[in-house]
Length: 212
Image (cartoon, rainbow, N blue to C red; front, side):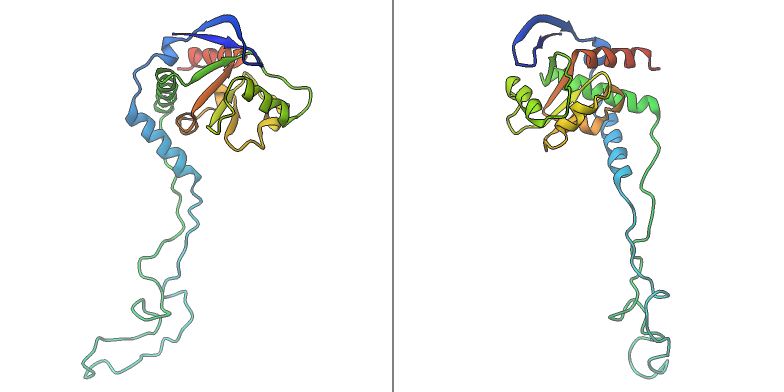
């Protein structure tokens, strides 16, 4: 698959880049992508939920009534979970939701996501982007030229971290900027257009050609 490289004004430069089949031409593995997204979301959870058990709530431990002869259930403490104000039975406790996923599995998931975007025609190539100073207006002008300022989600992939580009896009709600090594399956599947700069494509190819 060949893609045209567009200028920052949205004009076709006449240059074309052939997408690597080893990165963009695989058959997407949906189950592996599901596992990677599940791990990503699980790792975002703080796990700080907590409810008080009967040994943690304030209340008397005096026996409420005699053991037998009342015709009701036995009761030994107001802190029991069956009473209002008592502890919660089997309530949530702090826990760690993260889990391990093999590096090769995560690699296959990212490649599957990239291949899925290529298959759906959601990848665009642009010239290298660099700003002398942070300026959101200049970044919006680039999106306008590429017809990407349409309210849909866009992810820009650059070859290296460019502070001015990151700061220029930071205030745009539906725009993300990343480098190839910072890509994750969740963000790839959650974007409408993957905009890759020329140096970003070179770094992406180099990263996955050298990875095991």
